[in-house]
Amino acid sequence: MKRSTRLLRWLMSSGADAAGRFSLQIVGTVVLTRLLAPELFGLSALTMVYVGVLSASTTALFEEALSQRRIVRKAHFGGALAAVLVIAIGLCAALNAAVMMLRGVTGVASDLLPLVAMCSLLLFVDGPLSIVTAVARRHRRFGDIAAGNFFGVALGTITGIVAAWRGAGVWALLAVPMTARTTNLLIMLWRCPVRLRPTADLAAVRELLPFGGLHLLGRSLETLSDALFQTVVTRLFGLDGNGYLNMANRIVEPIRGATGAIGHNIAMSFFSRVQAQPERLRVAVEQTVGQTALLLQPVFVGLALTAPTIILVIAGPAWAPAAPIAMLLALATGIGGAGNFVHSGLAATGRAGVGVASGVLELVATSGLLLLLAPLGPLAIGLARLLAWPLDVVYVSLIGRRAFGLQLSTMLAANGVPLLLALTMAAPVLLLASWSSLAPGALLAAQIVGGAVTYGLAVWLFQRDKARALLASLRRR
Image (cartoon, rainbow, N blue to C red; front, side, top):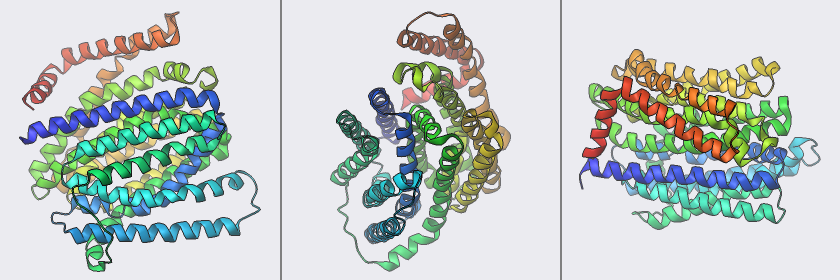
């Protein structure tokens, strides 16, 4: 099968996964917001972000190292699997011992610590899942990754809804990621082309650590940044405030996470082949940024413009404070998304240390801006991200310039022009919201159609050649 045909198949299956997961997230949110209070959403989000900090040690240490390395033996996979299981045992034991020692703690911590301890069992899922995902990435089995993600979220959503209906409280929300990830692991193990067993091969593990250790540090800083951000949000605006952030993430994150992972997985498979040829790598990164921006900018700008209507439809007027946060998060994602492919290009060349500096930058910028903007109220939550995330695009573009000749002006143009064109959708979307007396569902449908037509016309007028080239490329593939 030709490479272009495989790429189109990967994109189609991954796109279906992204759309499916977003739809399932919406369905789950519609039901769960009717059954559970905002503070429970805040508590569950805070729980999972701390579990994510722990989980980074099992997921980030080897997956990227196994995917990036030019030559990998089965011993590398077996040694990595054994290592993540040992790490999971140690962290879970330490965490549960800490919970026993901190009995009697009051406040939010009294509810949070036991939840984190129970959910830390996910480390035994996340670690092996990262290893089998690395196998799938090396074998270009992106359809398997998409299927595992989709069916995991589907079963997790059903489990969460049933648990909420039976009065499980915060555990209904926690059941969603726990079920989803476990199901994903089982599917990936079933589809894995290599039968893996943990092996005590320290030499193989040591070969992965130079890249894996730096990548782990960068990912840990990223997860710590999110954990600190949510902790500060809870401190400033209470669990309700973190619940509104959780609601905003439920609209933005499924698409941001899916497109980011899809783009990185597929881009890495091509970037890594030209990692020793700086000029070809530069062209590949710039073309990828330009083409994906033309497709993704209208998605995130459209999410930002329609966020108030979406929240009204899926959660009701009680969740209206989440709308401005969702709008700003979606815009921040659209503006900052171009940096993801530069990160992929740098990772393909083995520069894992860039992620460390990027993590420090995000940690300082997001939390510092949140504290500085706190007098604005919950609006500061989204505004801090909108101001902080573009800084990473500038930073990695400057690193990319030294690494393979990437031009910051080219990056800004490739991402900025589609962003400006996407902003033309504001006219019909906002006019419909101001003047229309339609029911929320009908208003949302009208806004989507009006925005899509406006963006299509703007692209045809100002980016016709690029649009034709992109369509021709897709037809050839």
